Length: 546
Image (cartoon, rainbow, N blue to C red; front, top):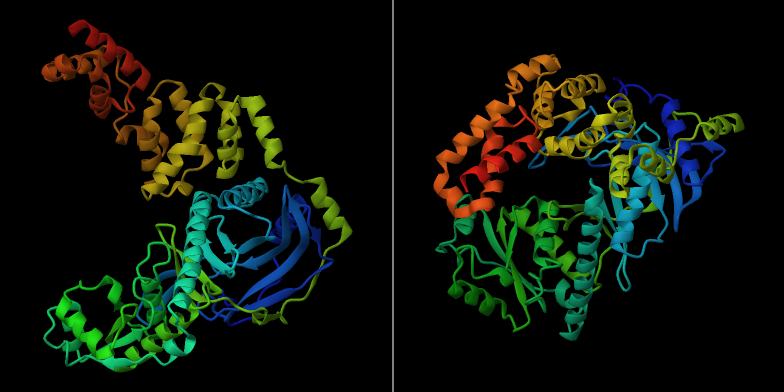
């Protein structure tokens, strides 16, 4: 629309989104504001076409269990990054402007595990509104972590609840390591002026005959090889928790676009020999505790990278830097930008304030959803689920769908539960878009399952087919997947054949052959007959030959 292209003023606040934010505010015992004012938050990375994100404070001063809730805000999502190249980012506008609810806790969370538990409960409350998207990334967590003698670090974009605890644990270890590095630098007598005035030299000529492919590729394209002295940093750049050398490389890349840097703690290596390392150390007059960084790139790029690394090295004397970081697949983090100040927001002049009336709040309070603990108790009583199952179901966002199907197929409750809690997530991990599966299709699947048309093991295959063929119906999927049920006699014949083909293995393993043979049989009969029946017949046939 024209708003996304920044060609017309923004529209008014979405009333439904505001009601959901107010509902969430009441669920966490927060105090809604009398009047909602929309603000502009400055965004400079290109993810918002207007250059700022709209955000509005909805409520203050809430509490869940033992954790304070400082603010509830309603804001708009940013554009989705599709691809990034050198000096260029391509964004998609399909997500821009979608309402988000931001729940900010107080600094009452003492441990990584408590952080995960708190995030789980907040996520369950959001899912209870039945207005929240499901799946990976629907509920995103930002962590603010600080420890004694450290500084506040904001970690963006944690997309799963299980990752919260792991990311927090690794960040605590990183900060502890940075504090130890600070102490080691002070013990070595390193001062800020030593780093600020540390020499850097052009080693392009000295390395022109170097056998390193990295060096030769740079020099052959007209690049430079420059080395910066890092006084007191020897042995501190490759520590597992802090990875300070990688930090230097990230700062250098963000500042200049340079492909990366090499440092003395990881050398010799990358084709650089001991003799070349010694030549660098001699020319820079490095002492035992000194390190160096090698920059490879165009002259202007190298100058900017050297300046960025020198600044980050100075920060190491202070221990932990206040900054914003992103999560990586291994649950470690990487520098993004400095921590923003409060001055990045100012009023949105194109959207009028919204009065929060007593009648509106009364209507919301009258129609509040069940809290997670109430949902859990009802699920345990009604469907016989255990605590772990109820917790997973509530957090998954499929509670309403589960109950809708379980009421229609009470004998299939366990299979329905397994479909939502396990099968869907397994299919998502395989890249299947499970949002294409609606309750109408699920109802038809469980109806045919109840009639014995196929076995429950066929469900993943059917769901995968239906998700990838939007116009297909369940009967077509059953036919295309070859899931016609076979008779018990046919099952017995298949098992007898498989046993006879592997008789030496059966004689050797005896009853231990059950599990391996079960896998072979299931490859032929999965979805065509119940796995329990296959297991029983397999054991019977094995007893006959042993």
